[in-house]
Length: 416
Image (cartoon, rainbow, N blue to C red; front, top):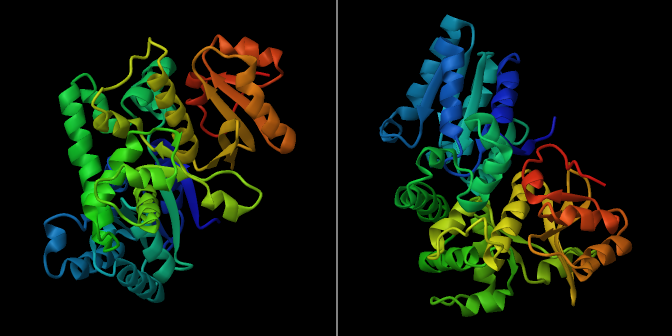
């Protein structure tokens, strides 16, 4: 079984955890990471309800988690429940808050396995970097990792029973955080929720607590500038020039990587047969939820009925973010004057995608056709408005509307 799986929806994650918890214990530790406010705690509480007396839910970030003896009491209780019920399930939320959490978890898992105590362990954390680095260092061979990703349009349709077209518009305008859905009509309340429950904890707590951020003001500025340039290729020198608090190019690149580990920004690399050249090229900045665009753009969300350039940038951003959040490797390609918005490798296959939301001319497809001629293992895909489908068909290029693309889950299903 692979060490981890990326890009799982809430429903799929719940199903997968249910399957693994039904296996004989002790089994590998299940490490669940993901962005803030996508339902990790809700998922653990659902599992606790399903398994009843066998389940033990504890949050390391709670007041109880800060009390002396919290860790020891948790595992004493786990053994007691396993003895009384035949097995136990420990659901440990925000495990990364515990000092030396991976070493401590390794010790408990090894002890329980040695004693043949039937205990399952599920642990969650909001930062991929903190969960990933700790688990790799101390838990090798003892864990399976999965990511509960940003919610897609398909997840909103499934859970909130809304139309696919409306769900696609929602993820473009305000993102897919489930906690926003009930307050999406209240702009000020929605923006406050995003700032206070997602952005501030992720930047001020998850990343800064790593001890790797010497200039927190610079980190915040890089986040703000990145979200103001959705789906744009920006040289690090140019990005550096827009910052009030200047930092070395290496620091700017490092902070962009940290923002990616916190599921906020993905600096996409340029596609190249030579990886070093791709890494050296300017990144394409993709914000991983359009909710973060809405909270930083003073102009508010774009009008979906007006085909403006800004609306086009937001749609391109959400399409690339959807592919990234779904576990695909996403890059871009550019050789002046030609460019392709996204190069996708992964479980969806090999695709070169171009996102066009305005009127389409034959010249708009030159980059896509040139790239796929040079690299024929990649299939071209035009993502467009409904009116663009016919143009793509005439050019022999598979096409989807952007609404259809945002509904893709396991594969890209296209019209040819």
